[in-house]
Image (cartoon, rainbow, N blue to C red; front, side, top):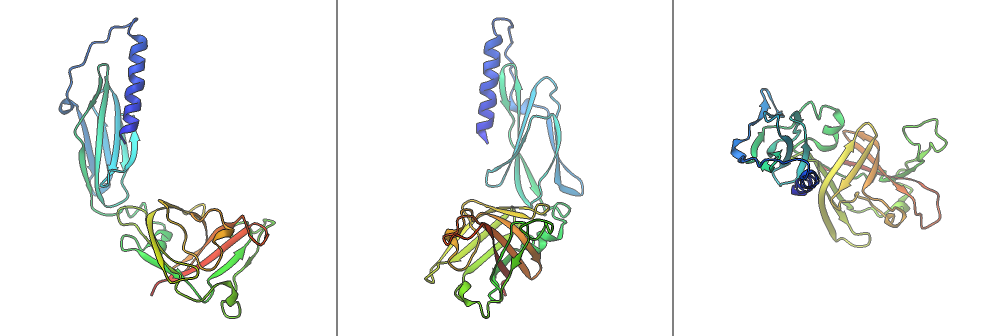
Length: 281
């Protein structure tokens, strides 16, 4: 978070140096506790925060961070409204850039009581995550895997619109019937995901945790922080990207996520490998 501020300070200093022969700027003797600004949460909706600077002679710089110190936004506007969609603790930082340099105010703490219901109003959020409480998905071994063309299922007129979602009975070759692990999503203070993956030919499990992005309109989910999609069977080498998925189906009891088979070891053409999940009982 400090890096952006240091860059701005450096640029501001270069501007002053290039103009010093033409102009003479007086030093501004100003302390952070003398800055006039407000940080106000909206009554009845504490997810909305109004940031207002009353320092028209200075350049404003705002930044705000979560409880872990992760920067979640910045702005150079004098007045703006921000949305903090998750319950939790935040800090808002205000800096005024004056002719004499940058003046930083003490950070302002903000407490958000609950997740923003309007922000997460689309049903898919609750289906996938069960909100703050979280939801755990496991492979549905009745039909754990399938394949589809790149146009499936949202472009029926496409040339590559097809799918095959076989039952496991009679198609046991697709993968061994075992506990392949689990995948948990929640909205507890952030977009959180945790994946426990069972090894291909052993019972050892590894667990990784990170964050995710869900673009509902584009039907896509992306994992961040080193987390990869839960899968079963010997398919890992056929796919170059296990962190970006297409959402093929999402209902209360069925989730199908697809990765792209783009480096098939058997020489098969590019297609979607679709893994099928159900809620953990």
